[in-house]
Picture 1 (spheres, one colour):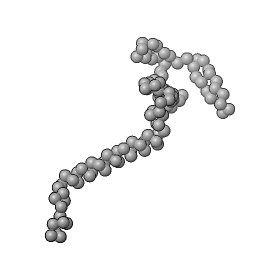
Picture 2: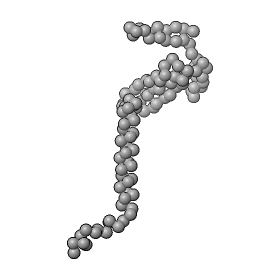
Picture 3: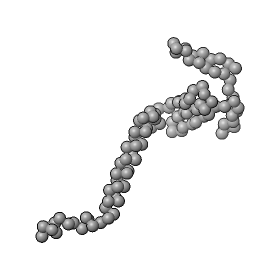
Picture 4: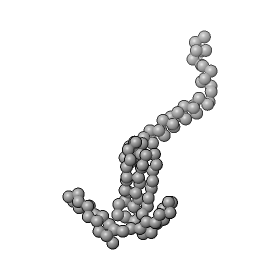
Length: 108
């Protein structure tokens, strides 16, 4: 009678191990996503506030990312660029920020 209590019918089920591995993988994936969002300071993407981020300012691969409401726009400036709206844009100058926080605009 004691042997019957030690062996339950679920011990012989090989699929029980697979379901446990799936649960562990899902917990790991969620933890990884939370860690990446907090590491790269991307928590603004989930807030209700509007914002603008400039990646690689002043370099050739600079990007401007803006969030307005639920819409996120990504703009990569170049010398001459046509947007999806059909509007034409071009670079007209450079802005420099000094050590005291003052910004100087130099037209080209």
